[in-house]
Image (cartoon, rainbow, N blue to C red):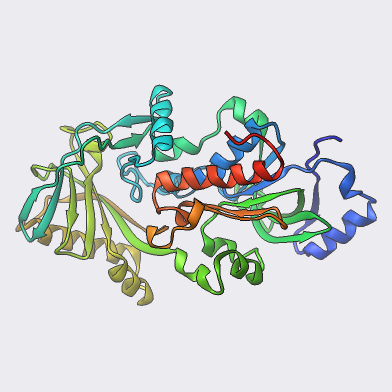
Length: 392
């Protein structure tokens, strides 16, 4: 048996059926090779699963559509328009599970996270009315270094074990005991613009899908999602907020750097310059997140993001009880999709043994960074156990 990542490339527009037929025509005998495990999604859940599978000695291919891994942790890093504008979605990391706390400690030793010891959370219960929000005993907050997406970046050693394939998966089928994926890879023209691209076909022995459920609907048959998550229940695993970052010309002179709001469409506000260890430097950066109800109406009304940022800025000023906020040098807004602990799954993942198919992600656990890591770990352990490998 040999490890082999069979990937056939076809011009754009050729269907998966054509790719399969061509594969058969070439006389490829699927059972003659040890096909790699496939992982779809290069966020923290997918990268965690790929790391564990590779560490167990199995060949693994990680499919990621973006130029770099990180998923939503890294998405803002890709989009941000200024070095001053940091993570609009994930503002801090904390652990409730001992396993994840141990991972945070290891990341801290590697310089990938730093404890946010100056966190000073408050609640805002009415405009201009705030009070301290003490941390629970033993509670510790962390921030990714140099950014949150760093936690999912593969080291040089890991890149030698994990084959990262760029391209969007648009079809996944299980046939002849093999998962066949079709991916579209954008080609880059002479001017640097993406063109129609090519279709690639990948063969995998097992598959872990570590994307939001809404993304999986684009390439996985509905009946498989219904089987894995319950009929039509896959609609429940995604919520959206609008996150906006504001770079102020001067500091707001507030006695806190993190606030939970109960009197506003804004749920959380964080001084990101403090979180990044830049307190005292001008300008000052604040990130605010709307609640889901406000975001749902705004998005249903098809309002533009710059308009939503302006409204959130006004809501922020009103909640602070300030007559006028300092001038804003720069602002940017994005739609932040996230999992929710209301829909967590028993065991933190799905594993269908007969199909050798796993589903994982923060949505399957608790909607947090911790949940993504634990869910990816759980799916990898299920896969390894099915292979009869040690999962300790």
